[in-house]
Every structure is written in C-alpha cells, then in structure tokens.
Length: 152
Image (cartoon, rainbow, N blue to C red; front, top):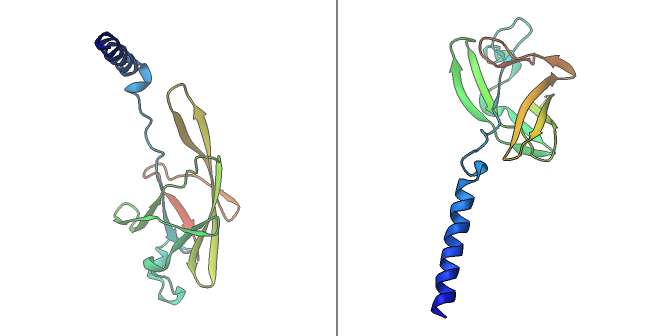
C-alpha cells in the first residue's frame, strides 16, 4: 500500500511539473483593448458644452442585446478637450457587436464594433477591425486611438 502511495505521489509530481513546463502555462493573452470614445456636436465641440441639447455625462447609457452595458468614465482628456468614455465590448462568442448609445430620452445612436478572433494554440486574441457609428465607418484618431462620435 505504501508503495502505491509513493508511486502515485511521484506520478502526480511528474504530471504537475510537465504541465508547468508546457509553453502555454506561462503564456497569457492580453485582455481585449477598450474602445474609447468622446461625443461632439456638428462643429466638433464637446456635446456637453451645448446646454440646449439636454445632455449630461451621467445620462449616457450603453445597451447591448437590450440590457444596460457598463462603460468606464475616464474623465477629461486635455488632448481632445472632452470627456472620454471607455468600454470593453468583446463578446467571446461573436466577432461583431451592436451597441446602442442612448444619449438622452429622444436620441439613441448605434455603435457597431467588428473584431477578428484569432485562435492560437494557447490563447485567443481579439483585434478590432472596424467601427461604425449610425452606419458610417469610423477610424480611430491616430494620436489618441479614440473614436469621435458626432451626436448632435
């Protein structure tokens, strides 16, 4: 009985050390990057500077599949002189998501985000491939990586 216990311990130790030596044991994928965006009016100014628009940062909501989807408020960015919002829209079973951006009770816009899913031996990598706001393709700003969304 003692011999079986010793052999079992040795086999378990070998199995654990073999798993630890696997190349995938030390590799971890980075989480998908956030999508950062800010809201502007037709002149390119902060949408929150227009008091007649009835917008407030706390009233902005994201919806995904009919449910509220949390975003992170990151504060004012001096480079764009605006409030920047950040969200992590990757759904691990899809390669494209549609988010509804509810600006206020009268204004809801659509943000479509497409990404490629690259399944590797050890992990899966997600890379954004396209952004569409109300059907119009957007590019990230080269200097900040933000999306500028014209909502007014």
